Image (cartoon, rainbow, N blue to C red; front, side):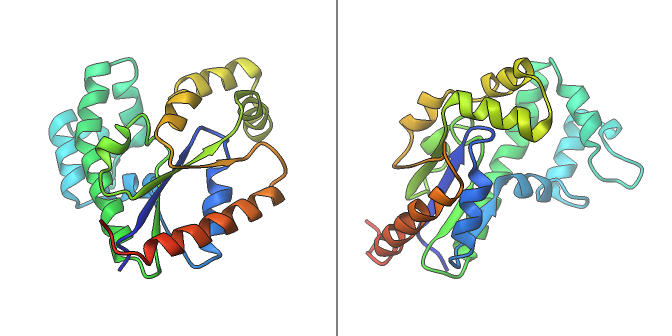
Length: 206
């Protein structure tokens, strides 16, 4: 059981996955918000039933699973519909992440939450003991996106602009890993934070 939970977040192409993989190699369980978002609307779940009740059976595929393409089309450009979907899914994702982290073996656990700042920050996740932000300059994000996804600078800029700003993410950070250089540089930063988190987790929670 892990009572000490770290939230990890960062902008697109900041290197969140590289960081969480390094924590996993040190025996730390990482609960992923993207995977949780799929789990809570899997066939047969109350979450999927609630989505269908709100949006109708047209958002289902022939096998009864959520048609994500149809769902995206349904909420695209429709702010009330998007907010309605988020009001169903986000609380379920938060609860799923908390369950996974609290059930994890190890001195502490990590909840990887890409849209933590956009989803209410610390107020929405009061059970996080600390928040670690993976930070990279916007120009680094843009370059990585263009290389990773084979897109042009304009689309990369729109993807970055669609998220919380760098300053908004940093405002909720207890810890920061700057990831704007070689990946090897992450190892030392992760090792230092792992030592710190193990020490903090060994202390009684106040």
